[in-house]
Image (tube, rainbow, N blue to C red):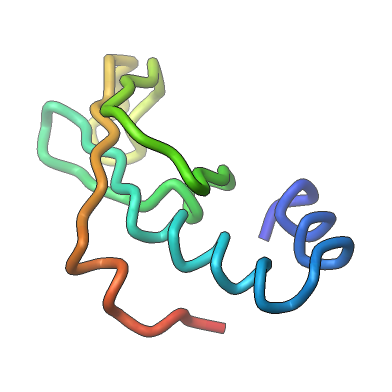
Length: 83
């Protein structure tokens, strides 16, 4: 968990913190090479959000800097939150 995520988990009510983590895990960042990871795993937060933004990131799999798509995956939202 990154520092910003820890601050949110500490300051906000527990119910909100769990909701933020679950929702952020459902937002998936995908590289054109096929590598995918949740916003939460990247160290980010995406809560009560909409749209399909793009992020310019370096992919840990292919090593290239490229535009990654960000999309909500409802099946990831249904999965339990890891601790």
